Length: 293
Image 1 (cartoon, rainbow, N blue to C red):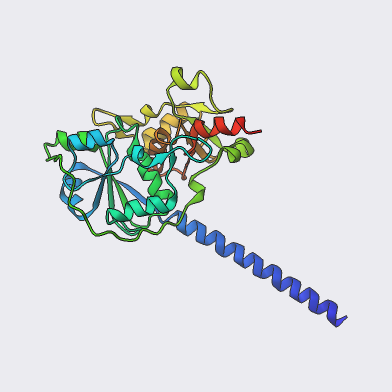
Image 2: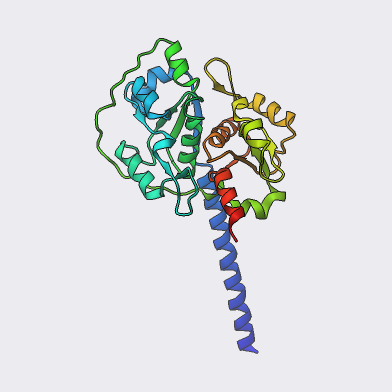
């Protein structure tokens, strides 16, 4: 009888320990997920404070070399994606390589970073870069220069054509936020639990074929004005509602390879809505998944 009681007590204690462990893991996940800070920075404040931040230009190299904000480093998706081992295009570099690249620019996980682009030549690369920092679990503030290089030049602020001086490399430690990404296999298993949004061109890409149950919303509708500034929260909510997009379920944005959808993710994140997901593998991964026996 005593042995049975002892066994029952041990079982209860073991169950309690597991419950506590799961609770701690959940709380840690919630705290980590909420640690990422992405904010807009207007041109006036950007001009006054960019010297105190690490500035990253998300446009292609050609545009960067033609003229960029003084002190800015180039960080285009074109230079940090490649086909993976399965032949899927536009996949982000392995985490270790990304950390090394960021560290070479003097960026640690606690650094304050200012991102800008043009929402055009980079296919929304500034959004991809914002998502990348969130996915890596960046702890320092990340700012988006509102209006990008267009607004900077419209304000008659200086641009240069020479890269900044080499800086001392530091260590960048990632803390991956897996909840901000999703695989093709996970989408197939969770289609009734998520809201899929296809951000590609309607006639050239969506109409010929798209993921099942996806709603179409071109990524170019996520910005406005001559400077292509991201929609504010109210405008985004109205846009999503007009397309019948259900935000009560996790919203998953996708395109061909996670770039344009990364921009949509960024605008969604800035809006104050519950965090969305960027299907970074896009239709490239989905097509490969469907062909898998």
